[in-house]
Each structure stands twice: as structure tokens, then as C-alpha cells.
Image 1 (cartoon, rainbow, N blue to C red):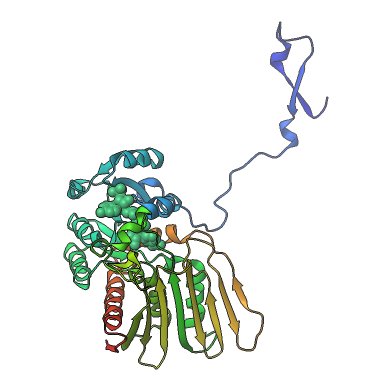
Image 2 (image 1 turned 180 degrees about the horizontal axis):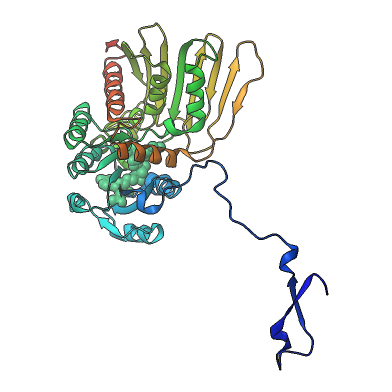
Length: 386
Ligand code: NDP
């Protein structure tokens, strides 16, 4: 029996006739020991240290993409929902552990709620400015969906409100936190394929006027603009991200199908071209009429980068091809980290009260440019100096 121990309880009356052999002797195996944290990890903050968030507008994008993004976040905690639909809000509250609820009329009461640090706005575009300004006045940091607002004046008012409140205002250009897009821009900026000379980008989908989330997109009073506001903005923003220059002029033409009853108030499509001081140009098209596409190409002096899809929710592909046709660098199918990465970056900016990477000023710049694109298209492609 060497190497084994006997359970003494088995010798007691009634415990059975034979001794019970239960485990190898302690002396034969080393003791289990705790160890320090192995290496450096990007660990989540404890719940009590995280910034507390209210989500305003529980629609398709907020529920489908951003709520899961908050769950995956390391620095944020969902605490409040603001919705015009109490049943939906309470149902989602039960699922996400959210117990504070507001509607659009009592929204200003968030000023007294210390369980809200930041507000994420996912309403139709024309409501962005009002709710962003109310949230800023309530002393909260604001991450607002793209496009920033309907008009340049609204964007300026949002920026002024953030300054007055000494709070941060970010625009949710999630692609700036998507690994394959970030990698592409890093390689372009590092000159890995020489000097960038030209950009082209297509962004569109077929709008369905009977699908509720598309209905407001076809009403100017709620959407601010058409396909360019909603999806074309991705290609425009990517061009400016890559070029790192301020355009000097813009030309554009509409490509809305004639007599299509969907497009009484907003454009169904527009083709645009920007010219930059260094002589580079960027062009793109947006559409509510062609098949779903988010494609971008960067042409440089020694190669090109292709992103297709460029701004999906996941599975974004990047291919970099050198002019000498050495094997392409391919980064296929990025995971769904852009939403949580964006939220965590905004938390870091808000906690430090420093500007978010994709700031209100960036949102304003893009609305100014889209307005110039519309002015050119309204004038049949006239050159608009910027
Ligand atoms: P939805 O129509 O699905 O959701 C909008 C929500 O806003 C509604 O569910 C409702 O929430 C609330 N709402 C308040 N007033 C109105 C109104 N008058 N009409 C309609 N809805 C109203 O739209 P999306 O989720 O597609 O878009 C919301 C925002 O997110 C937009 O700014 C859009 O541009 C942006 N977006 C961003 C994307 C990205 O990739 N970054 C992708 C898709 C959209 P409730 O019932 O809770 O009150």
C-alpha cells in the first residue's frame, strides 16, 4: 500500500469492512501553486471603473451592431436606454442588464443621472443635432452616428455645444477602428506602394421604401440627404483619410433614375470628384439603386490597394499589390471588432477629456463637402471651389 493513504473514516463502525483507498499520497505530487499574470493582456476594466453609457434610439443598427459592441467593450458599461418604444426598451433592458429608461420627452433628466457618462445617438439624421446638443447640455460626452447632421449649421451648433459644456463630441466613423482599413491607411502613409495618385470608391445598396429603416432615409426632413449622406459618405471619408490633404474643388452629377417614385425628396445616386492641391484626384459614386457595394481602390506610383468590401460590419478584405507583381499582401475577412474598438477609443477620449479620433470637426468637414457635391450636381456638374 505504499504511495496511498487510507481514509480513517472508513475504519469507523458502519463505514464498511474494508479500508477505502482514496488518493495518491500527498508527498508523491507537487503542491498546486498560483502564478502571477502571465504576460501583458488587454484586460477589461472592472465594471465599477467603466464609463456608463445611454443609447438613444433602439433601431436596426443600434440593436444589431452596437449593443453587442458594448457587451464586447472593455471600457464601457450600458446603463440606460432612451427610446420612444417602452416595451422594446424594457425587453432589451432585461437582456442587457439595463434598468434606467428615458423617452424623448424626459430625456433632459439625464442631467441628474450620475449613472450616465456618455450618450450614443443612433436616431434618424435630422434628430442628431437636437439630441446631441441636449445630451451635451446635460453634461454628457456624445458619440453620434454618421452622417453628423442634416446641415452645416447644425454641425457647427453641435461643436459649439461640446465646447460650451467642455465635453467630447465624436462621430461614429467605425471604419477608423477596423483593423484592415487601419492597416491599409498605415501602409499607404508609410509609402509602401509609393505616392498615392488616385482614389475611387463605390458605395450603395437598393433602397426599399416599404422597409421601415429605409422609409425615413427617403424623407429629406429626417434624412438630411440621400444616398451620399447615408452610404456614399464612407468612400468620401476614406478618400480624405488616405489623402491627408484638403480638397480645392469638387464636381458632381446625379445618377438618380428618371421618374423613380422613391426619389421625390432625396437623390438616388450621385457621382463625385474631388481635386487636391497636389494634383491628385479622388472620385466616387453613391447609390440607392445599385446592388450592395462598399468598394475602394487606392492607386499609387508603385502599386495599389483594393478594399472589397471596405466598410461591411465584418469580413472586410484588403489586398495590396506591388507594381512588380510580387505576391500580394492579403488581409482577408477581419473580425467584428470595429464596434467595440470604437466604443473603447471613445471611452479613453472621454475619460481624458481629449478629442476622439473621429471628431465633430471631421463630421462637419464631410457634411460641408457633401453639400458642395450637391451644389455641383444641382448645377449639372459645375466646378465648386472650396
Ligand atoms: P432605424 O430606423 O432602424 O432606427 C432608428 C431609431 O430611431 C428607431 O428605431 C427609433 O428608435 C428612433 N426614432 C426616433 N424618432 C424616429 C423617427 N421619426 N423615425 C424613425 N425612427 C425614429 O435606423 P438605423 O438604425 O438604420 O439608423 C440609425 C442611425 O444609425 C442613423 O443615423 C444612420 O445613419 C446610422 N447608421 C450607421 C451605420 C454605421 O455603420 N455606422 C449603419 C446604419 C445606420 P426607438 O423606437 O427606440 O425610439
